[in-house]
Length: 326
Image (cartoon, rainbow, N blue to C red; front, top):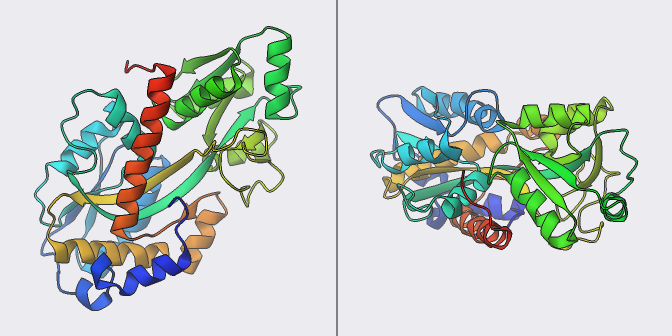
């Protein structure tokens, strides 16, 4: 389910059952501006994807789509706003699947149900995490990194942009699987953590390929492995974690479009249809592929399956690692 085939996406566009038929999608026209809620501040990938969609979708719908950045609480503030909005088609959101999955396990009393309170529209994009180190690190592979640490009886530090996020959970899984002495160092954002990797203050971190690609290209970081089932097209010489001996080590940062549960079906169909048109445009696909991102339009049912699967995966690691919310 993590890889949406072109065939499935094409079928989705013509299937009334999955909200994709063009004729079915044309029977709702908004009469006022719409709101696209982003769970993070401006400048991040979720914000960039939201703005990629907002203008052409708004033009097609004949109404402005206002991007509403509501950062904080690991995405809970934004997703609460979506879950409790009127289900009339005028409000939808673009959650990070990893953050959505983490909060479902770390926060005991969410103000919404992470599955039942949302109407999935389409998967949007995905990018694998990559394990990076300082370029002067003598380790040439993940196996070498772990072996050196064990031989020297040395603690390895790994950074993250906060408790429960993708780079934290990936680091914890490596600790569990390798049985090495790894210590989590949380930061207030991925930027400061990357600065400390480049400065040698911490040993390593997992981060989305799109975030670290410029630093890998400039030689300020070195990649040891990608957390995906196959190698990244923009990092063809970097092995996967599976190749490094860690089977099923699959961590993708990804995003989807969701509306409040019970959203007017015609509105959900139209929103999804217009989003998929943008995500399938050749120049858009090429631009984001060059940054390491894969645009992945899907059916609503496929997105719901992905959301549930991510929650199960994150919950398992969080429980095994004994992670608690701050």
